[in-house]
Image (tube, rainbow, N blue to C red; front, top):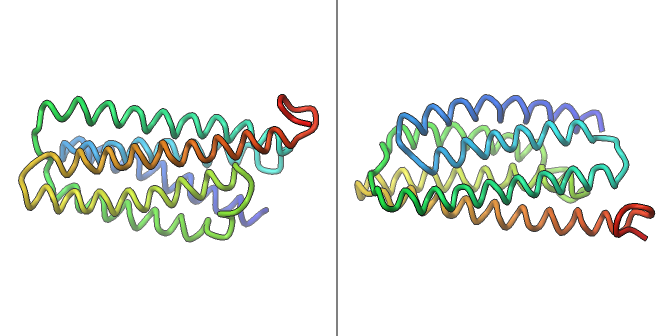
Length: 196
């Protein structure tokens, strides 16, 4: 558990720093996919902080924390979907070079964090939510790099918006999976609401 706690601290700090870097990059590039990824980094930093706070707590406490994290993942997904729909009307393409550089840096950070957390991917809902966030981030970064190439090649906004919608769908799917697992864990706890 000590090693897991240390990994969570490293992940928290890395995600908090990347939130700032990507937020600045998203503003400079005018990229919704980078903005979505920066918000995701902020959510992940919160996710790691919550995981650290409930580490070693009873299963019911960890499961309730996972419900909060799942709700945040779902909320992030809905926010990005709405933002993508609003941006479609504008259609101004982002700046692809900044997107690519920042996306590559974010990918390196997320792959590193995902590799550190790989050993705990099949744990309880709390551990699983941390792993899923890291894995989703790495997939999202690959998609941002693809969007940067698409924007570069087409000089259009649609690759950026498509990737933002993909990242939103990934957050919705993962948030729903964590929500279901946390509810199952709560039902298995004697004395918890819905438990035996």
